[in-house]
Image 1: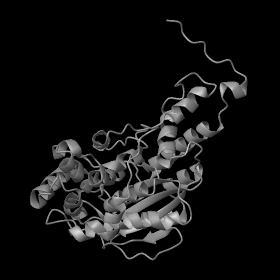
Image 2: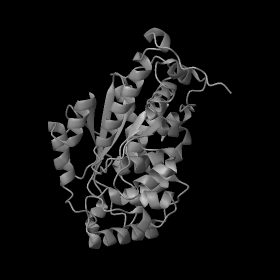
Image 3: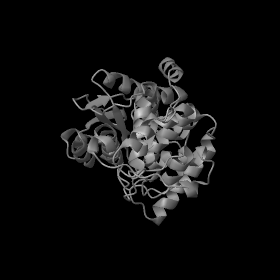
Image 4: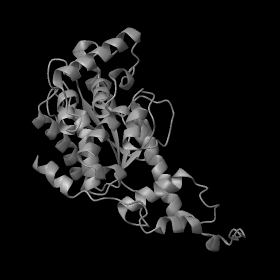
Length: 355
Protein backbone atom coordinates (compact mmCIF):
# COMPACT_ATOMS: atom_id res chain seq x y z
CA UNK A 1 0.00 0.00 0.00
CA UNK A 2 2.94 2.33 0.63
CA UNK A 3 3.98 2.41 -3.06
CA UNK A 4 0.41 3.06 -4.21
CA UNK A 5 -0.07 5.93 -1.75
CA UNK A 6 3.27 7.46 -2.70
CA UNK A 7 2.42 7.22 -6.40
CA UNK A 8 -0.97 8.87 -5.95
CA UNK A 9 0.58 11.79 -4.07
CA UNK A 10 2.82 12.61 -7.04
CA UNK A 11 0.32 12.45 -9.92
CA UNK A 12 -0.11 15.94 -11.34
CA UNK A 13 -3.05 17.35 -13.25
CA UNK A 14 -2.37 17.75 -16.97
CA UNK A 15 -4.00 20.65 -18.80
CA UNK A 16 -3.86 20.15 -22.54
CA UNK A 17 -1.99 23.03 -24.24
CA UNK A 18 -2.50 25.31 -21.23
CA UNK A 19 -0.67 28.27 -22.82
CA UNK A 20 -1.87 27.73 -26.39
CA UNK A 21 1.73 27.31 -27.64
CA UNK A 22 1.04 24.08 -29.51
CA UNK A 23 -2.01 25.43 -31.34
CA UNK A 24 0.02 28.52 -32.26
CA UNK A 25 2.76 26.35 -33.73
CA UNK A 26 0.29 24.33 -35.81
CA UNK A 27 -1.32 27.53 -37.10
CA UNK A 28 2.11 28.64 -38.35
CA UNK A 29 2.68 25.45 -40.39
CA UNK A 30 2.15 25.54 -44.14
CA UNK A 31 -1.18 23.72 -44.02
CA UNK A 32 -4.82 24.80 -43.85
CA UNK A 33 -5.83 25.39 -40.25
CA UNK A 34 -6.97 22.22 -38.52
CA UNK A 35 -6.39 20.06 -41.58
CA UNK A 36 -4.46 17.37 -39.69
CA UNK A 37 -7.48 16.69 -37.51
CA UNK A 38 -6.87 14.39 -34.57
CA UNK A 39 -3.15 14.17 -35.29
CA UNK A 40 -2.93 17.75 -34.01
CA UNK A 41 -4.87 16.66 -30.92
CA UNK A 42 -2.45 13.77 -30.30
CA UNK A 43 0.55 16.06 -30.61
CA UNK A 44 -1.05 18.47 -28.13
CA UNK A 45 -1.75 15.68 -25.63
CA UNK A 46 1.76 14.25 -25.84
CA UNK A 47 3.55 17.60 -25.65
CA UNK A 48 1.31 18.75 -22.78
CA UNK A 49 2.07 15.62 -20.76
CA UNK A 50 5.78 16.03 -21.38
CA UNK A 51 5.68 19.78 -20.76
CA UNK A 52 7.95 20.29 -23.76
CA UNK A 53 7.04 21.74 -27.15
CA UNK A 54 10.13 20.09 -28.68
CA UNK A 55 9.45 16.62 -27.26
CA UNK A 56 10.21 13.41 -29.12
CA UNK A 57 9.53 9.68 -28.82
CA UNK A 58 12.50 7.33 -28.60
CA UNK A 59 11.68 4.69 -26.00
CA UNK A 60 8.43 2.82 -26.71
CA UNK A 61 7.34 -0.19 -24.65
CA UNK A 62 4.24 -2.34 -24.67
CA UNK A 63 3.41 -4.30 -21.53
CA UNK A 64 1.45 -7.48 -22.17
CA UNK A 65 0.07 -8.34 -18.75
CA UNK A 66 -0.88 -11.99 -18.22
CA UNK A 67 -3.03 -13.70 -15.64
CA UNK A 68 -5.41 -16.61 -15.21
CA UNK A 69 -8.92 -16.67 -13.80
CA UNK A 70 -10.62 -19.20 -11.55
CA UNK A 71 -13.96 -18.36 -13.14
CA UNK A 72 -13.02 -20.41 -16.23
CA UNK A 73 -14.23 -23.37 -14.16
CA UNK A 74 -17.73 -22.14 -15.01
CA UNK A 75 -17.31 -22.67 -18.76
CA UNK A 76 -17.12 -19.00 -19.77
CA UNK A 77 -14.35 -19.37 -22.37
CA UNK A 78 -14.01 -21.25 -25.65
CA UNK A 79 -10.34 -21.95 -24.83
CA UNK A 80 -8.75 -24.01 -22.01
CA UNK A 81 -6.77 -22.23 -19.30
CA UNK A 82 -3.38 -23.61 -20.38
CA UNK A 83 -3.56 -21.43 -23.51
CA UNK A 84 -2.47 -18.45 -21.38
CA UNK A 85 0.95 -20.02 -20.67
CA UNK A 86 1.20 -21.35 -24.23
CA UNK A 87 0.62 -17.88 -25.68
CA UNK A 88 3.22 -16.41 -23.34
CA UNK A 89 5.74 -18.76 -24.92
CA UNK A 90 4.65 -17.50 -28.33
CA UNK A 91 5.20 -13.92 -27.17
CA UNK A 92 8.67 -14.81 -25.92
CA UNK A 93 9.54 -16.42 -29.26
CA UNK A 94 8.31 -13.36 -31.16
CA UNK A 95 5.59 -15.08 -33.18
CA UNK A 96 2.42 -13.42 -31.88
CA UNK A 97 0.47 -10.58 -33.46
CA UNK A 98 1.72 -8.16 -30.83
CA UNK A 99 5.34 -9.02 -31.68
CA UNK A 100 4.74 -8.30 -35.36
CA UNK A 101 3.00 -4.96 -34.76
CA UNK A 102 5.47 -3.89 -32.10
CA UNK A 103 8.35 -4.52 -34.49
CA UNK A 104 6.48 -2.50 -37.10
CA UNK A 105 6.35 0.59 -34.84
CA UNK A 106 9.75 0.01 -33.20
CA UNK A 107 8.40 -0.82 -29.74
CA UNK A 108 9.69 -3.36 -27.26
CA UNK A 109 7.26 -5.97 -25.92
CA UNK A 110 7.54 -6.79 -22.23
CA UNK A 111 5.49 -9.80 -21.17
CA UNK A 112 4.53 -9.84 -17.50
CA UNK A 113 3.30 -12.79 -15.44
CA UNK A 114 0.90 -11.10 -13.03
CA UNK A 115 -0.85 -14.29 -12.01
CA UNK A 116 -0.62 -17.14 -14.51
CA UNK A 117 -1.83 -20.46 -13.11
CA UNK A 118 1.43 -22.19 -14.02
CA UNK A 119 4.97 -21.49 -12.72
CA UNK A 120 7.03 -19.43 -15.18
CA UNK A 121 10.72 -18.52 -15.06
CA UNK A 122 11.85 -14.95 -15.70
CA UNK A 123 13.51 -14.50 -19.09
CA UNK A 124 14.82 -11.60 -21.14
CA UNK A 125 11.40 -10.34 -22.26
CA UNK A 126 9.34 -11.98 -19.49
CA UNK A 127 9.01 -10.37 -16.10
CA UNK A 128 7.48 -12.29 -13.22
CA UNK A 129 5.28 -10.20 -10.91
CA UNK A 130 3.10 -13.10 -9.88
CA UNK A 131 0.57 -12.28 -7.19
CA UNK A 132 -0.95 -15.76 -7.24
CA UNK A 133 -1.47 -18.85 -9.38
CA UNK A 134 -4.59 -17.44 -11.01
CA UNK A 135 -7.49 -15.78 -9.22
CA UNK A 136 -10.13 -17.71 -7.31
CA UNK A 137 -13.51 -18.49 -8.84
CA UNK A 138 -15.45 -15.27 -8.28
CA UNK A 139 -18.74 -17.17 -8.32
CA UNK A 140 -17.93 -18.70 -4.93
CA UNK A 141 -16.28 -15.66 -3.33
CA UNK A 142 -13.84 -12.81 -4.01
CA UNK A 143 -11.45 -13.31 -6.93
CA UNK A 144 -8.63 -12.18 -4.62
CA UNK A 145 -8.07 -10.52 -1.27
CA UNK A 146 -7.98 -6.72 -1.01
CA UNK A 147 -4.28 -7.02 -0.15
CA UNK A 148 -3.62 -8.97 -3.35
CA UNK A 149 -5.60 -6.44 -5.36
CA UNK A 150 -3.33 -3.69 -4.07
CA UNK A 151 -0.29 -5.88 -4.72
CA UNK A 152 -1.37 -6.36 -8.35
CA UNK A 153 -1.69 -2.58 -8.79
CA UNK A 154 1.70 -1.98 -7.20
CA UNK A 155 3.23 -4.59 -9.53
CA UNK A 156 2.24 -2.37 -12.46
CA UNK A 157 3.74 0.69 -10.78
CA UNK A 158 6.97 -1.25 -10.14
CA UNK A 159 7.22 -2.10 -13.84
CA UNK A 160 7.15 1.58 -14.78
CA UNK A 161 9.83 2.43 -12.23
CA UNK A 162 12.06 -0.43 -13.40
CA UNK A 163 11.80 0.49 -17.07
CA UNK A 164 12.43 4.19 -16.42
CA UNK A 165 16.09 3.34 -15.90
CA UNK A 166 16.45 2.43 -19.59
CA UNK A 167 14.25 5.28 -20.81
CA UNK A 168 10.49 5.38 -21.24
CA UNK A 169 8.71 7.97 -23.37
CA UNK A 170 5.39 6.24 -24.07
CA UNK A 171 3.77 2.95 -23.10
CA UNK A 172 1.10 0.67 -24.49
CA UNK A 173 -1.01 -1.68 -22.43
CA UNK A 174 -1.93 -5.23 -23.44
CA UNK A 175 -3.26 -8.40 -21.88
CA UNK A 176 -3.30 -12.18 -22.06
CA UNK A 177 -5.56 -14.29 -19.91
CA UNK A 178 -8.09 -16.94 -20.87
CA UNK A 179 -11.49 -15.92 -19.51
CA UNK A 180 -10.54 -12.32 -18.78
CA UNK A 181 -13.46 -10.74 -20.62
CA UNK A 182 -15.64 -12.17 -17.83
CA UNK A 183 -14.10 -10.12 -14.98
CA UNK A 184 -13.80 -7.14 -17.34
CA UNK A 185 -17.53 -7.32 -18.09
CA UNK A 186 -18.23 -7.60 -14.36
CA UNK A 187 -16.12 -4.51 -13.68
CA UNK A 188 -18.02 -2.58 -16.36
CA UNK A 189 -21.41 -3.69 -15.04
CA UNK A 190 -20.53 -2.68 -11.48
CA UNK A 191 -18.68 0.57 -12.13
CA UNK A 192 -20.97 1.61 -14.98
CA UNK A 193 -24.04 0.64 -12.91
CA UNK A 194 -25.54 -1.18 -15.87
CA UNK A 195 -27.21 -4.49 -16.57
CA UNK A 196 -24.87 -7.45 -17.01
CA UNK A 197 -26.53 -8.32 -20.35
CA UNK A 198 -25.56 -4.90 -21.69
CA UNK A 199 -21.96 -5.13 -20.47
CA UNK A 200 -21.20 -8.68 -21.61
CA UNK A 201 -19.97 -9.77 -25.04
CA UNK A 202 -18.85 -12.97 -26.73
CA UNK A 203 -15.17 -12.75 -25.79
CA UNK A 204 -13.21 -15.28 -27.85
CA UNK A 205 -16.27 -16.20 -29.90
CA UNK A 206 -18.86 -17.78 -27.62
CA UNK A 207 -22.05 -19.20 -29.12
CA UNK A 208 -25.44 -18.11 -27.82
CA UNK A 209 -25.62 -20.83 -25.17
CA UNK A 210 -22.17 -20.07 -23.76
CA UNK A 211 -22.90 -16.33 -23.81
CA UNK A 212 -25.98 -16.86 -21.67
CA UNK A 213 -23.91 -18.98 -19.27
CA UNK A 214 -21.32 -16.21 -19.07
CA UNK A 215 -24.02 -13.63 -18.28
CA UNK A 216 -25.45 -15.88 -15.55
CA UNK A 217 -22.00 -16.44 -14.06
CA UNK A 218 -21.29 -12.69 -13.87
CA UNK A 219 -24.69 -12.02 -12.30
CA UNK A 220 -24.04 -14.67 -9.68
CA UNK A 221 -20.52 -13.35 -8.96
CA UNK A 222 -21.85 -9.83 -8.41
CA UNK A 223 -24.69 -11.10 -6.23
CA UNK A 224 -22.33 -13.24 -4.11
CA UNK A 225 -19.62 -10.60 -3.67
CA UNK A 226 -21.58 -7.33 -3.66
CA UNK A 227 -18.65 -5.20 -4.93
CA UNK A 228 -18.87 -1.55 -3.95
CA UNK A 229 -19.00 0.58 -7.15
CA UNK A 230 -17.57 3.53 -5.21
CA UNK A 231 -14.49 1.54 -4.11
CA UNK A 232 -12.46 0.52 -7.19
CA UNK A 233 -10.07 -1.64 -5.17
CA UNK A 234 -13.04 -3.54 -3.76
CA UNK A 235 -14.37 -4.08 -7.29
CA UNK A 236 -10.97 -5.32 -8.46
CA UNK A 237 -10.63 -7.67 -5.49
CA UNK A 238 -14.08 -9.18 -5.78
CA UNK A 239 -14.61 -9.55 -9.55
CA UNK A 240 -11.31 -8.52 -11.18
CA UNK A 241 -8.04 -10.12 -12.24
CA UNK A 242 -4.36 -9.83 -11.45
CA UNK A 243 -3.47 -8.57 -14.92
CA UNK A 244 -6.31 -6.03 -14.77
CA UNK A 245 -4.89 -4.71 -11.51
CA UNK A 246 -1.45 -4.66 -13.12
CA UNK A 247 -2.77 -2.55 -15.99
CA UNK A 248 -4.35 -0.15 -13.49
CA UNK A 249 -0.92 0.12 -11.87
CA UNK A 250 0.73 0.82 -15.22
CA UNK A 251 -1.69 3.71 -15.78
CA UNK A 252 -1.06 5.17 -12.33
CA UNK A 253 2.70 4.67 -12.46
CA UNK A 254 2.96 6.21 -15.92
CA UNK A 255 0.94 9.24 -14.82
CA UNK A 256 3.24 9.63 -11.81
CA UNK A 257 6.19 10.04 -14.21
CA UNK A 258 4.30 11.99 -16.91
CA UNK A 259 4.32 9.17 -19.45
CA UNK A 260 1.42 8.89 -21.93
CA UNK A 261 -0.49 5.59 -21.86
CA UNK A 262 -1.91 4.10 -25.05
CA UNK A 263 -4.73 1.78 -24.07
CA UNK A 264 -5.49 -1.37 -26.00
CA UNK A 265 -8.96 -2.90 -25.88
CA UNK A 266 -11.58 -4.19 -23.46
CA UNK A 267 -9.37 -5.67 -20.75
CA UNK A 268 -6.88 -2.79 -20.82
CA UNK A 269 -9.72 -0.31 -20.50
CA UNK A 270 -11.11 -2.25 -17.52
CA UNK A 271 -7.75 -1.63 -15.85
CA UNK A 272 -7.93 2.03 -16.86
CA UNK A 273 -11.41 2.31 -15.31
CA UNK A 274 -9.98 1.08 -12.02
CA UNK A 275 -7.04 3.51 -12.23
CA UNK A 276 -9.27 6.45 -13.16
CA UNK A 277 -11.59 5.72 -10.25
CA UNK A 278 -8.65 5.55 -7.84
CA UNK A 279 -7.22 8.86 -9.12
CA UNK A 280 -9.22 10.87 -11.72
CA UNK A 281 -6.15 12.97 -12.59
CA UNK A 282 -4.85 9.94 -14.50
CA UNK A 283 -7.48 10.50 -17.22
CA UNK A 284 -5.57 13.02 -19.35
CA UNK A 285 -2.60 10.64 -19.53
CA UNK A 286 -4.75 8.01 -21.28
CA UNK A 287 -5.23 7.68 -25.04
CA UNK A 288 -7.67 5.11 -26.44
CA UNK A 289 -6.01 3.40 -29.41
CA UNK A 290 -9.14 1.75 -30.80
CA UNK A 291 -12.64 0.56 -30.04
CA UNK A 292 -12.86 -3.20 -29.78
CA UNK A 293 -15.50 -5.40 -31.34
CA UNK A 294 -16.19 -6.63 -27.79
CA UNK A 295 -19.64 -5.37 -26.88
CA UNK A 296 -18.85 -3.38 -23.75
CA UNK A 297 -15.71 -1.59 -24.87
CA UNK A 298 -17.35 1.51 -26.31
CA UNK A 299 -19.32 1.85 -23.06
CA UNK A 300 -16.08 1.74 -21.08
CA UNK A 301 -14.57 4.42 -23.29
CA UNK A 302 -17.67 6.56 -22.79
CA UNK A 303 -17.25 6.26 -19.02
CA UNK A 304 -13.69 7.54 -19.44
CA UNK A 305 -14.82 10.21 -21.94
CA UNK A 306 -12.39 8.84 -24.53
CA UNK A 307 -12.82 8.84 -28.32
CA UNK A 308 -10.89 5.95 -29.90
CA UNK A 309 -8.37 6.63 -32.65
CA UNK A 310 -9.29 3.56 -34.69
CA UNK A 311 -12.26 1.28 -35.32
CA UNK A 312 -10.89 -1.81 -37.07
CA UNK A 313 -13.23 -4.46 -35.63
CA UNK A 314 -10.31 -5.90 -33.64
CA UNK A 315 -10.78 -7.96 -30.46
CA UNK A 316 -7.46 -9.74 -29.97
CA UNK A 317 -5.92 -7.89 -27.05
CA UNK A 318 -2.20 -8.52 -26.39
CA UNK A 319 -1.51 -4.80 -26.96
CA UNK A 320 -2.13 -4.96 -30.72
CA UNK A 321 -4.34 -1.86 -30.81
CA UNK A 322 -1.90 -0.03 -28.54
CA UNK A 323 0.94 -0.72 -30.98
CA UNK A 324 -1.02 0.93 -33.80
CA UNK A 325 -1.90 3.82 -31.48
CA UNK A 326 1.75 4.38 -30.59
CA UNK A 327 2.52 4.66 -34.30
CA UNK A 328 -0.11 7.37 -34.70
CA UNK A 329 1.09 9.33 -31.67
CA UNK A 330 4.67 9.19 -32.91
CA UNK A 331 3.56 10.42 -36.34
CA UNK A 332 1.75 13.32 -34.67
CA UNK A 333 4.81 14.29 -32.63
CA UNK A 334 7.02 14.18 -35.74
CA UNK A 335 4.61 16.50 -37.52
CA UNK A 336 4.88 18.94 -34.60
CA UNK A 337 8.68 18.83 -34.75
CA UNK A 338 9.47 18.55 -38.44
CA UNK A 339 6.92 20.48 -40.52
CA UNK A 340 7.89 23.77 -42.12
CA UNK A 341 6.05 26.99 -41.40
CA UNK A 342 4.57 29.21 -44.12
CA UNK A 343 7.61 31.47 -43.75
CA UNK A 344 10.18 28.64 -43.86
CA UNK A 345 8.55 27.02 -46.89
CA UNK A 346 8.07 30.28 -48.77
CA UNK A 347 4.33 29.64 -49.00
CA UNK A 348 1.84 32.49 -48.89
CA UNK A 349 -0.31 32.54 -45.80
CA UNK A 350 -4.12 32.43 -46.09
CA UNK A 351 -5.80 35.76 -46.70
CA UNK A 352 -7.93 36.85 -43.72
CA UNK A 353 -11.64 36.77 -44.51
CA UNK A 354 -13.13 40.25 -44.52
CA UNK A 355 -16.20 40.72 -42.27
